[in-house]
Amino acid sequence: MSSEHWTGVAPRALRPSLLGRLLALLARRLRRFPVRLQLWSGEVLTPHPGAVHATIVVRNAKTLAQILLDPVFRLAEAYRTRAITVRGDLVGALEALFRSQAPPPPPAVRFKPATVARAEEAANRHYDLGNEFFRLWLDEQMVYTCAYFWSPLLTLEQAQLAKLELVCRKLRLAPGQTVLEAGCGWGALARYMAARYGVEVTACNVSREQVRYARRRARDEGLDGRIQFLEEDFRNVSGRFDVFVSVGMLEHVGLANYADLGRVIHERLDPRHGRGLLHFIGRNHPRAVDRWTRKRIFPGSYCPTLSEAFSRVLEPWDFSVLDVENLRPHYVRTLAEWRRRFEQAAPRAASQFDESFIRSWRLYLASSQAAFAAGSLQLFQAVFARGCEDDVPWTRRHIYGEADSGRSEGIGPM
Image (spheres, rainbow, N blue to C red):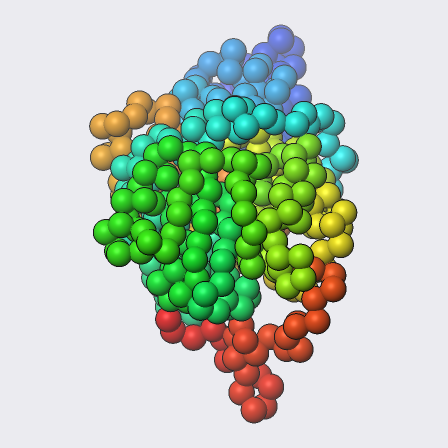
């Protein structure tokens, strides 16, 4: 580590002490990370040869050593507890870091089948934080999944309604059909399907807070007679349905439980004409969700590759994949909107939660936006049907509409 990397207070001849060795090691590790490091003494380290996005201020040597021993987890924990602060463009720095990473080896994490009780516990730790917390920064419909910005001029509210419409068009819903929705969130899609397409919906969710909200809102909108919200795990739902849909649930099911999900879809769908849609966060390469996110934000989460989802959920039951779309850029925009609203609402959220909670969610939203922008995460929508199904559209006209010239005109206003 040469002295030209330092500015500010002199590093005391780059002392050949333990701290000096730690700093030299950290400089090598940070070389691809476009940030500068400021120590508690005022010394500043800038190992990255190009422009930097942010400055990380480290409060003490203990934090520095912990980050070196366990970079991802300890860096996130230090941010959560204010052992470090970040000045500058946090999202830009994280995106640059993600872009610099090589494709990872297969994950070493071993996934065990989750019982219904464990699934409920994991969901409660995230989704039962309180409806008021999520209401502070989500859209009016309380949709907590990727929006669809068919026009850059759309508001978040308009883009979330566009996403609901997009899902319905891909499923080719028709009045009188029956739909099973697994993992229904606060019920926006179920209400939209019932109100706009005249279908009967059974929607299940293991989050008590979300189900209570969904039931109340459906009742207020006069839809409770066409929607049944169940506080239940998807494995415990009975009945036969024309359509299956899951938006944002596959990430929480876990690899070891994909066989159960596939079996449930097979058993619940019409044996001849059943069809469905999976909307989920995924990856290009198998990789475990980092330990900090699993501990602090989403316990038990896993974002699969397309091959993992298809081979474990759909292929064993002879489902045909009809259409796959990647909405990754739309999630970058969605997360940017969520972050903006979250920052505006942070003072109000601080009256409900402590500072470490607010900082955890700030980091989670920023790192998620950066991961989608860098391509570390993807957002897949996959439409499938029974292998014997013959009623399959020849084009995507039913989804987007097409001009006579064949040029897609977009999904259009709702």
